[in-house]
Length: 361
Image 1: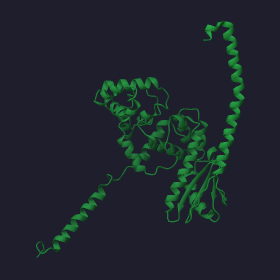
Image 2: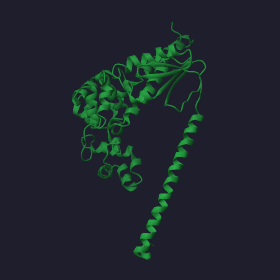
Image 3: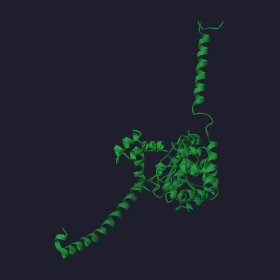
């Protein structure tokens, strides 16, 4: 349309459009300002105003209802002293957030628009371990906020920054990971551990992580990533066509080159990666979190080495030793099954002994 008007007419129309857009910019800014004010007002409207006491525990600012300061000192302070104080000396997110802790018969609601509130609540009949788990969870949520601006947080996501809830489960996840690199790691090869954690760059079709058969399983388990773009190829792959699976995977890797988009190809998942992060922080001791954050722009392996004060292979070896110490002492559920069977046998014997027909002489 502009071309049909000729150069002079097109230039004039373009200038008019620019002038019109210039008049809209102030209106857009004003609309955004009013929307921000309305959102702030809505957040304030959800605020809950109740009398509160403030308790400082390490880097934590804990809000409690009057009379519960001692309980908070005991529970929150115990978790802080045992799990975080040895290595955590500074955290921007923890400094900004607030923990609302309540462990009492009457639970009340609390919210504030002034800061992020991490809530740990439980009725008085909840065990102390329940409250301690909640404390670890909310501290972890804040610390993950620190990781957002780091390559560890962006490229090597972890499930939490806290002690593993069940180390035996971490061992099982490693043992069951469908990757020859994971199995070599379990056997004690540090370089294979680095590979299975995705801490070394992987070239080609991830041959250092997966065999062709393992790549087939990888594509099958992540079929939703491929079905939209290549449903027929995915069907062939699911039918056992290894070459087609490799073609699908190669196409994906060509299109998505960032570590974040490829994280699903890392053999060890978020819980196993979290166990390594936790181990590195505890192993590094005082200041390890600060050293990790100081390497925000470096590769995750560099940050983990700085946090733990260990070279990569040495860190893998020590983590592997921890993993073996977490190995289940028996097959899951076997002891329970044997005990149950034994009880049934004893019960049947007792019934048989009471029966006239089966009574022993």
